[in-house]
Amino acid sequence: KESFRELLTLGLPIYLLSFYIKDVLVGVSFSLLGKDNTYEYLNLGVSSEAPKDLKSYIHLKNIEVAIGDRATIFNAGCSDCGWKELFHLEKTPQYKFDKNP
Image (cartoon, rainbow, N blue to C red; front, side, top):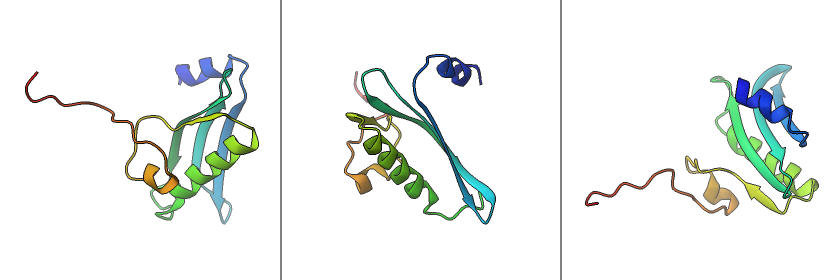
């Protein structure tokens, strides 16, 4: 909670996108536009009852917002879960396991 509150004090454009189906909140995402014009796609969450493709739709909507606000970089973070290749984004490993250091 505190880290999100601190982000709000930076004076940067904040994007809290909410997604409804039949007046029921089923998903949200939180992003900001950094000083270097990088769209930082920070977090999303969906209801357990949400359609299975809702996450892909939320990703797409964030890409649209970034393009609309003329972001020069779209930073989707390091997590993937298989969605990044759908949007031709580079996969960044979250960790590296070295069996023989």
